[in-house]
Image (cartoon, rainbow, N blue to C red):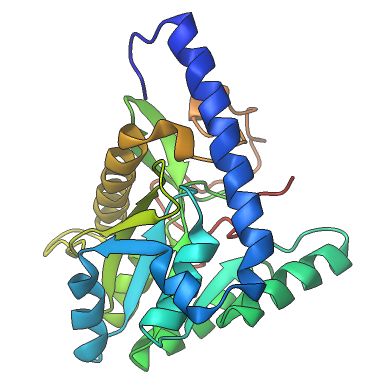
Amino acid sequence: MVPGASPQRLAELSRAGMRSYLRYWMESFRLPVWSEQRIRDGVEVKGVHHLTDALAAGKGAVIALPHLANWDLAGAWVTTQLKTPFTTVAERLKPETLYDRFVAYRESLGMEVLPHTGGSAFGTLARRLRDGGLVCLVADRDLSASGVEVDFFGETARMPAGPAMLAQHTGAALLPVTLRYDDSPVMHARVHPPVAVPESGTRAEKTSVMTQAVADAFATGIADRPEDWHMLQRLWVADLEPRPETSSKSSSEPSSKPSSEPEGERP
């Protein structure tokens, strides 16, 4: 992400990254008591017409975003400023009481939260989109055994197939979103142009092309403010533990189920 960075520069980025991550948690703990005006004032959005146009057309929209800055604040802005509820997916954390608290917290912000496990999330998300609704998925790390391989900062990573497959299944617009902090109290968001569905190719090939386009959009935002990317797990394939040789699926054959990281890192 920062080619040729000196040890001093890497140390500076590490400190800045910790400050950014702590800001995320500070904001997240305060969000439930923030006024609607405070939430509106806390986010500045460029390209929001890509989202509002898709919703106005009744086609639905899938927002895909990475773990940049504060995705919970972005979601609260959508429900507050745009008066648009949305559906998302969260990893079922253990213990169950912790997961229940995460769900209750996000539902208090106006989100419908589905568990990542259980197999029914894809169908529910598709129904929401066919009804012209909004789905938001944090989608920069694959949680399944069937993620799509993408080129990400010059190395191979796996990202979830869900956003691209939902767009193909339902005709919804697929919109990458990137977030960033600066030295002000305001978070900045950018809604990127819709990712087009390729006119030719198999479903797996189309999904691969679309997921790469999403990864490229993520990379622009992360490169702009690498300290705001809260990726605290191994991501690149070269850094992962080898997978068991028990599955015949290849990464080029995405699952029909969406794979999405929960909107919030575990401490």
